Length: 324
Ligand code: FAD
Image 1 (cartoon, rainbow, N blue to C red):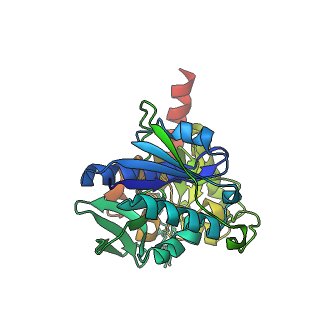
Image 2: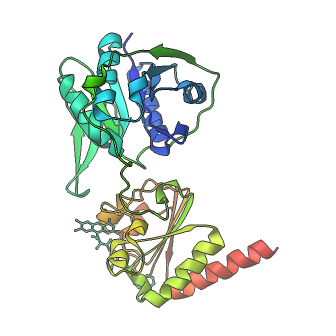
Image 3: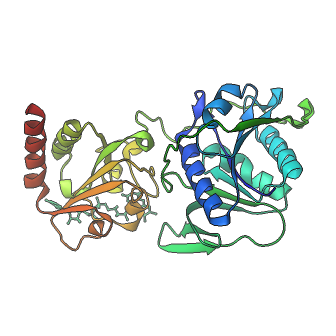
């Protein structure tokens, strides 16, 4: 039967956070199309991860196992998935838009005679897949047509992993045929975008600071607020461009895409390039002295005021709440 497959990536024995977001997208697509959703994992010893994933609200788990699937290679993963797709004929393949997926999914799409609808931020009835174009200035709507599976990858932070817990679903194993000579590359160290001291994508709370902070020495104020909230400190691009904070703290189209439970924007105007990186946050609090600042369009709570008055008052209030 036709189905929605979500291809999960393993990180330290678990599904990566962006894979769980892809699973949420897969579930949404399944609900819209009336198709069952299945999780797919690939590797050599998939059993523990398959068991974990079987409790995450999927119809079944397909474990594609082969000795040549670890470590990851684009040749191995492409060949394995190609064979599984041709054998089982899913209607949709949903991937997390990770570096690894960017490496092999376009090749898989080409092998299957398809295109990859990459970096999807929303799925509407149809299904119609939404992507951002030109640094978020335009939105494109894409519909799959023709025969064969539809391949999409979903942007980090665009779908909320909901951690749906269920009874264990069945786990099936698929063994592809891969000859050692088919693997033409030997992987090096996995790529990391920057030497990350912090993974903002995993942060539950973020205090993000913009040009409204005026001077580097004033960053201490934002740091104190972050400490009081148990939050990570992040920034808009001008702050990182000035070297006041490292690049791995930048949020936005040329920085990280985050979706914390709480995002406090301090003195940030809300340019589109910043918004695309944080508008998936669950609760957005904006502090800005300009009531017309675009950040207020996405904020759940807006404080119009001078951050040099508002932030110290917030820190005091948090301290006194904690003391009680
Ligand atoms: P500003 O736009 O200068 O806003 C400062 C805000 O602070 C204003 O709204 C002001 O009202 C407020 N303010 C001033 N003083 C106070 C005060 N005392 N109290 C309260 N509020 C105050 N930007 C990103 O953030 N991330 C990206 O990844 C990114 N990528 C980009 C990629 C490209 C190709 C381009 C062209 C741009 C990119 N930008 C990015 C830059 C983006 O367009 C904006 O210039 C930037 O986000 C603005 O940063 P800001 O909000 O900190 O500064």
